Amino acid sequence: MTNLAAEWAASMGDVLTDVPDVVKFLPGWLALLLSGYLALRTWRTQRLRRALGPDGEAVREALVDARRLLEEVCTRGGQRVQWFQKDEQREVGRVVQDLADRVGDKKLRRAMTAVAGTCAEVFAFAPPNRIMVAVAGQPEHPSQIEQRNRDQAQLAQQVERAHQGRGEVATAITRLNVVERRVTGR
Image 1 (cartoon, rainbow, N blue to C red):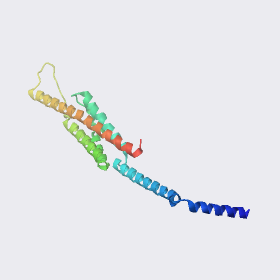
Image 2: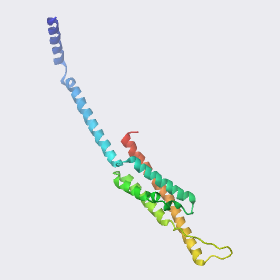
Image 3: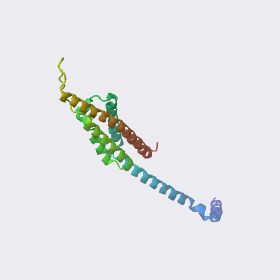
Image 4: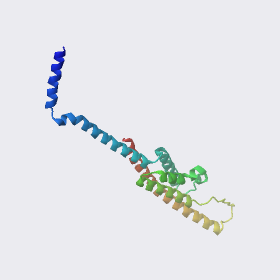
């Protein structure tokens, strides 16, 4: 049996010496190429995760909150909106700006900064709450009429800016989807 094994080993040695060097080193080259591909893919994924920021879901929630509040202003169409009175809703613009500072993607950061600026402008255009006292049978004072007209002009500016802001929110959410799609590969 040992003679047979020795003959087989000798015949295999002849076969291996007849094989070109390319075939012998092919597994090593394939492993090198695969390692390089995986290293590039890991680097790209980490770069995209940094571009998304530490928490992509928080960015999405803040943008959805901003969209909801801007849509509320638009649907009211020139009426007073009370969401400016609630602290957590008043802070939406600041939250979006804080998250924009943490995001690494330049286009997403720019879009989120525009949304934060829009929220601040919509808040600035909100007229202050006034106690309107109307007595039946008495005419309105000219200062009250003037104040009401100024408030209506501010509300119109607020609605116009909210309409523009809805487009900015849509742009930011679209960019967020693109960046997330690149990170997750969906």
